Image 1 (cartoon, rainbow, N blue to C red):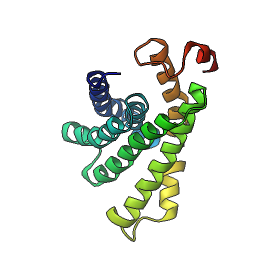
Image 2 (cartoon, rainbow, N blue to C red):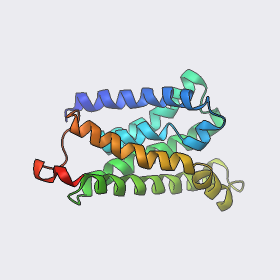
Image 3 (tube, helix red, strand yellow):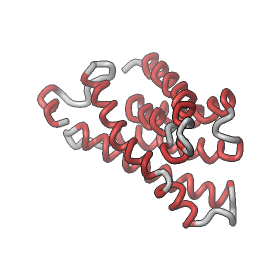
Image 4 (cartoon, rainbow, N blue to C red):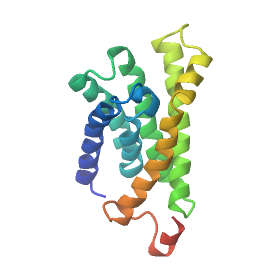
Length: 183
């Protein structure tokens, strides 16, 4: 895929980091529970690669905060760290994981990036952003229990979007036609 196409997709993903939270915030606690900003960042990492996913993860929350005020300033830095980790790890893993089946590659990359991003975000919160105030219990509750509906949505939606983009030939095929039935 050309650098221009990757830049365009990254720009769309950053814009979605502004638009999706606005739609999800119509639901009470929708942003916290459903984590809408995660979707375009993870997609960007999986579709465009680690560098573009990293940039989308950094810029998505920043552009959103500057244009809409969401996330609130105290949550901006931790979200930027978390989302940058998602985009980076998702892109890196997809670059190296090759099982021969697209869905398997996507799920391995997606699940691992979601775990690593949450661990990195928790470490940054616990040691840098809120030292002494951020406990393991708060981390587990915030990053896994409260956001469980969002995690489920991400796991159902993101790999399907990537497969649809590939089938529509909007992104390059990962495997040859012989492996197409192994989605």
